[in-house]
Image (cartoon, rainbow, N blue to C red; front, top):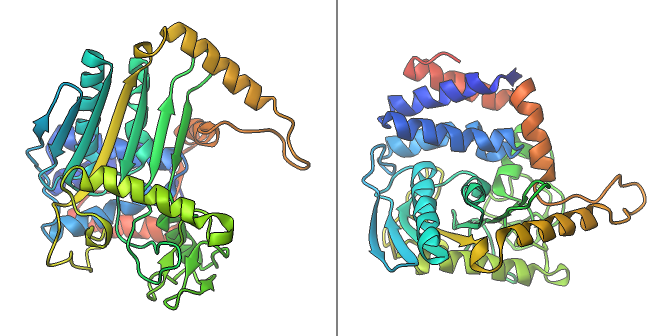
Length: 356
């Protein structure tokens, strides 16, 4: 099933209005959510809409939050999201980082009391139009076992960095610190397919290809999959995201992070407030003239693009290339939805009397 972008955007916005989001927040949240579908990160797009609604039903999401700065210096701030949609809280915090960078060269903002914020790349890319480098981190539901552990103590904890260029498109890295994001497992579950080895371990800590392994008490694996392939590095990266996002802000961290799924209750003894995020904005001209930097970024990108590919591969890609290509294709040709996702949206529409 392929749906036009504007149809999905309007549908998403109307659902968010039905749960009490103000008009501007509903538009922003729909934009953030649909940016994932446009860029081919289908696990974080409209497939998650009903999940946000279920959290709202559980009174774990405040549809009309009072988002505010609770502590700041000229270059830093802590933002309290008031349990709002992360899709709205995160852009607020990134704008604060950008404004601070305009004033003093860099801006750094840590967030507490938020929820799932969509794709990390949306927020890091906000810095690009200001000739800035953007950084975006978030912690997430504890589904990941540290190296050598059976316990789930970390989230998929993504990292995104967006870097402007001149004539070339920007460098945009957006990645989970696990071998695969949980959303990719959800896609395999809908397709009734197995997962590759290195993505999941079972409840005994043994490798498994069962795409439902996490649901059965297993865990996602850090980037690298196992110790021999560097999972300790993925574990360290996920830990850094957790600390920057939550220990620094006063959000929940590690196993205390509230789960995204509404049928699981948050820990009754939290160590903080909600989920945490971390954002950075760096003005390029705080380091060197912007034109010089962009010229050399163009040179960097062109040199890597011209690298000799290995046999069977057409070319070397720059982070952000596949997503850019998909966005062009899907804006004009529509967004493909798996049957279970489409049916889920239809049920959501019937419930709120919103036609898709």
